Image: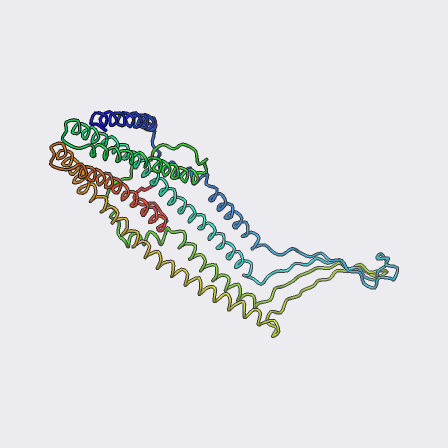
Length: 429
């Protein structure tokens, strides 16, 4: 193939690629039309109001709270009718004695109050489970929010890099026409540009996946369009470990639930001890006698939990309750230790992510950008090869993504830290 034929083929290839990239730029320009950004606090309020997981948890709490009045109530009274010495004809009107009785069982004083306290502590534990579900939902929502931000930012950086690489293509074409470089540099630039375009569908798929996950937490259709999220805040996180742990001891729902479990089991043990005392059954009766004066009667009875053939049942119940108290206290201690470790671990990760982001922003990115400019200037003057220009371009693009990835990683760990503590930090909502 002659030099002129190669030049014509190269021109056709460049023009075709230009038209194709132009169409992609037009399509992307539509996506970049100004639109309001997603506001995270508004999304949190929407999720707390609409998320079906929370709706179910709140209904479970409502159900648990209705067990409290049931626990403090007396058993149903009993109404009885007895016929004695009824004739063989079963004429009940001629029975020697007809006894109508009404009785009520009264538990030993203190039993109903303890049952109510046990049910109340259980309901309070269910409430703390709702609060824990809320904190979990907020953490997942924040992580999905910043995943969507990173997906949008990756697409934005991608198109910025395409624009820059097109400049490289023009430089390579100019040097090729001037006879200063071979056609290889032009083909390398085109291959690199085509590779970037092939990556775009993957980036768009990641954006759509992040958008669908956020919509799912908001109880929306996964295809519901969402505006780009706001950029993460910058700034060092300087809260002290002990301050965070003290905040967790008063705010973390899981710790509150564990403490309530100890209280509930202590009340259950007290109730098991009360079971050694008898309950009282009181009754009144009306006697109707055939061809004899009528009258009234009364009845008092108690159960005998201290009988030697039934007492082992109550002994075992008390031992079971004591073991449950010890287990609940151990679970509380375990969760306290786990909370302290999680706070220390997440605090270190938050600070490390921020240090990495600062390093990229203040050192790595400026140096990488200088490297791209130096490689471009060197290629124009023939001091460096086109491969050096491409490598500098790839490194700069990768460092930009790593910078934003470090910011998003910091927000992920902050969301987890807030979940562990049970409260927002520095208005991080």
